[in-house]
Structure formats: C-alpha cells, structure tokens
Image 1 (cartoon, rainbow, N blue to C red):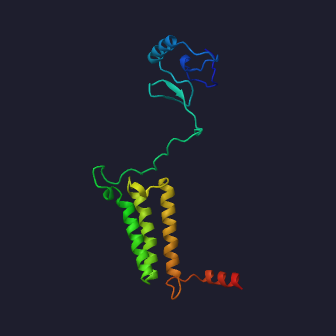
Image 2: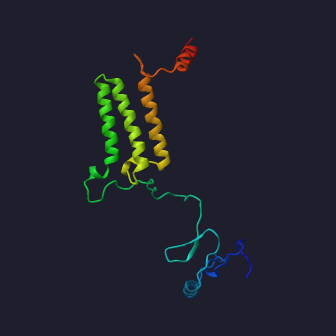
Length: 185
C-alpha cells in the first residue's frame, strides 16, 4: 500500500482515511469496516489518537472556533475533601486573604510599615503554598509556575518598598536616591 499521508513506517487504516467523494458513506459498510478496524487497530499518522470508541481520529493543535469552557488551572482542585464545608475546601486562599486583610487593617490604623510587610509576606506565603501543595483551590489562577512567580515577585516588591518607605527607612539603596535626584532636577 502506498503512503497517502506522507508518514513512513506507520500503517494506515483504510476506514480512518476520509472519503474523497462528497456522498454519504453507507452505514452497513461502516459497520463492517468498524468490525475489521477493531480486529486490526492501527493509527493513521503520528498525531492520531483514539476517540471514545477506540477508533483512531486525527487530533489537531488548532484552537476551536468557539470555546465551550475553560480548563481548570494545574492544582486548581479542592484543597480539602468534597464533603468538607466550603471554607475548609478553600483554606489556602482564605489564609492569604486574611493576612492581606490584617495588613490593610494595620495600615489603616497607622502602622504602615508592619501592615505592608504583612501584605507582602502573605503574597510570598501564597507563592510557597502554590509551590508545595498539590491542590490549592481558588489560589490557583494560572499555571503553577506563573502563579508562583507572580505572587512571589509582587510579595518581594511590596516588602522591599515597605522597608524603603520614608520616614526612617530600614533599607537604604544609595543608587535609587541618586536616580531620584537626577530625574527630578
């Protein structure tokens, strides 16, 4: 048999090749072909995968024209068993939100530096939970790597800005002061 798809070394199932005519195929002929295909299952090319019935079908890497739903992020399942109450199932994001809320409360009560450090630490804790825990519930928004980088970088930046805040900064970076004076002149 010739190589109609252009692959070498891959056997081709005659029933999986699309008919060239526009006429509807005979249903009885398809049933006979399916019985023959079940006896001798082959894939038609390197990117074929079996469908629900076990017959090889061509898969595509193209996105569908209309999206029906979205995929759950990696690790986006429940953080506790399904029979647990809702807050227990979402404890990672509730922990981060509670720490951020406490940091905002401290900031509103005029304890600015401690409040913003707590907000940054909560985001860093979210990055660590996203890295360590296999399932974090609603804390998973994007891929695991993207969530870790996003939470971690934002947390570190917030902590560094809190440490450099005036008056009496805990962290002094001299070239930033020189850059500010150079640009404002």
